[in-house]
Image (cartoon, rainbow, N blue to C red; front, side, top):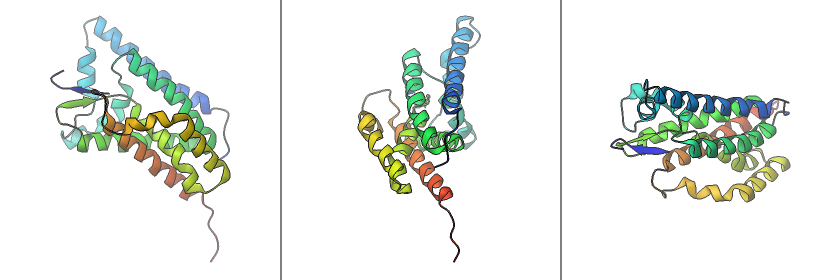
Length: 206
């Protein structure tokens, strides 16, 4: 979401809890922001300005690529991302493993936030975890191509069928939607899938 400033490995048993932990953190942060705003200590707008990504700002502000995913505009924004994170994140983890799930998450957040900083309009502030959501989608859709294994190909095809309605979110459309974050998050997921596939490829003797 954006605002105008004027306005492989074998699955483990903790994959769903791993995504639940992250989603729980998002809810804790959102509730804390609401409480602080209600008490008049720290408004939601102020926290979005501080922890959100400001495109074209100082390089020293790039730390916000990791804080912005924790901030959401409203309950609908938070709920939508939470459901998507749980579903897509669990699929990534079940196929790739817990370690690769976090790798996809971190790479997607980094690439998504950097892309926003580079190309989004300068008079906007971007928050939300949708870059990671689209990173999961990118990883799921590309894993079959990179791994060339039946399970990976099947997962990519099934993901395309189930989540094809998310694809338009990669392009300019509705106002207030950070399509730049979606697009670069998707590319980050593809990159992470590529890195995972390379690390999982066994070396052969010459």
